[in-house]
Length: 550
Image (tube, rainbow, N blue to C red; front, side, top):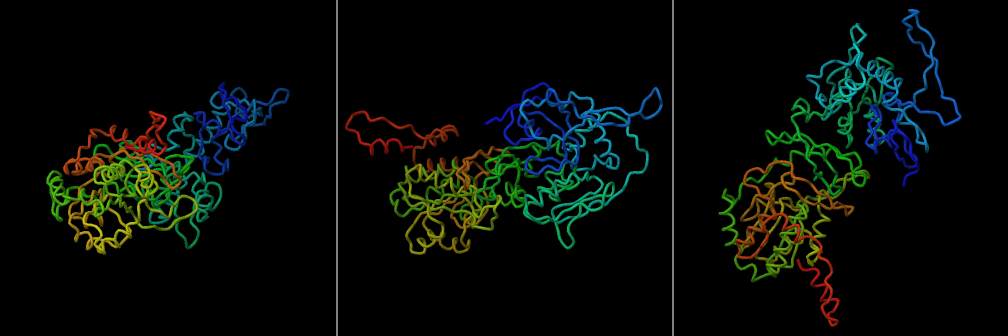
């Protein structure tokens, strides 16, 4: 709910209670240049790049300052008046406030002076700096500084390529002491391992004695460094940002479902990094180190060809082999187990669950995924799977019993309860060797896997599926928020979207599954509207059955 409006360069901008000028401007798409400010951190107002001119209320004189300015006629410095400029990152909004951002000559002079000061000692090593192409200094130099450099002295030299940890390297000469990294460590991660030492020209960022920059959000310090003073080792000197494209995706590391950009080179189909994507409801502006470093999993450790008995095969050969392996499973639904995957999307799980419920009449459904791990109170979830909630949602939508843990399937296999198992995903939370021993004893075990994991090694037949980065998908995080990941990379090897493999498997088994495209799948997944009873004698139970039919 808007508290009032302010005027920025003649444009009315609504603001909410407690907002600063720069925050209200950002929501309205108005750029106020800055270095030290970040919307998720406290504002120190130290860089002075966001200075703006504010008109006083009617009847109140403007606050003016005496400054020395060079007078060309007198060839001397004289005292002149100038309005007092205010930092937009700390100045709160007030209804009716008038702000001059780009229309004030004094503001432009102040910003030019800040740029000049920051560039006095800054090395001109843009050709080798990883920040080139996305550097705030470069952008603001073009926009706010059009003068020749006046300092002719040798610049001050500082430490270079100092390892703050195995993941972060510091360059003191590029640092502008905006203190974002200090505040991320102190206020976000709760680990004040970084600080500023010395004063003035000699100040630089340092790590506490005996420590490393190794808290779970250390890569955020490099991601939000505006000038390339902190660089992540996994990306350092690997490529240029202007060669990269960004895809909208989700971190697959845990059930939080952090929104992310996956930056990749379209010429080589190679991913280079994860970056957090802002989502106030889920991850705000952040990602943990574990999630930031998980992008190689989109291509590493993949299952790129079908396997029949552990040997490479074409997809057609593998589907025919699966048809033989699963022959008769629809006649023995009580002896058929379906394993859904907390690593795969709703679409993939829906396809397999629908095959089980509508065509195989199988009711025993299990869920597999990574085992639980560590957590914190900020982003990191104990559940290391991106779609556990989505699997349960799909099962409920199709009227299946809540999926049981994979460990229970192992207990049933030890008692020879099942003869057939059709599984989705690669990861399981139990011992892989134990699973292999049990699954290989079955008459038919077919796995649809994106990665070469325990399930692909345990099944008689493994079919290669696309990874999360190669196909669009919906994931439901631990808070019940459904989020969509877009396809970013081209599929590797013989991989197909898992839902398409399910359709192909069903058709190979003789079932008439009429999905021809993803649109058909999405139509089948869409909630069905309530069906009104055709006669007064129709019961609520009948209407419910009709409504839940796919």
